Image (cartoon, rainbow, N blue to C red; front, top):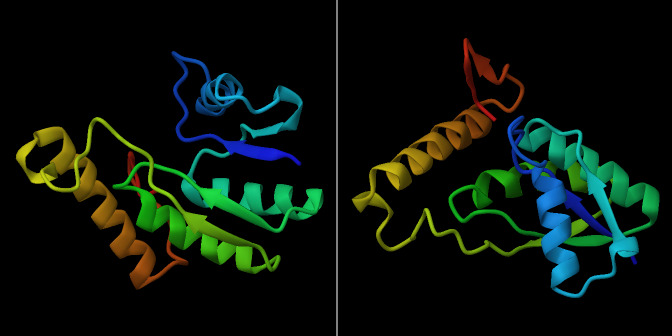
Amino acid sequence: MAVPLTIGALDPHSAPSAEIMRRQTVRLGVPGDAIVVEPEAATTQENARNVSRLMHGAGLRGAILVTSPHHQRRASLHFAREMSRYGLTFIDRPAADPRWDRTRWWLDEGARSLTAVEIVKLAVELVDPGIPRSLGSVSLR
């Protein structure tokens, strides 16, 4: 069985997120040859599309969607849209995130910013999922 790991963010100054997640998964006991890395996506929507295609091509039927709690709703929206095209299913499992606490996020400036950005991006998706996702230098994905 393959375990698709996907990129969370592009950072030219560090190892790709997918590679970091792959290393951690191997440390947790998953055999390295059972892991498939999807390193191409630059947005959540691209990530959902690429992973859905990868899973469909590999004959996989379901997944566990793990991401930060503040990002889970929007990621779930993208993955539901893309996976439904192939009859795939997934369940949500937010990961622990030391930068964000669901009971106290509004007390920390960084956590407030993360939340505000996700709320705006989610609202854009819900209002019109077909509109362009970039406003100047601010990406909405």
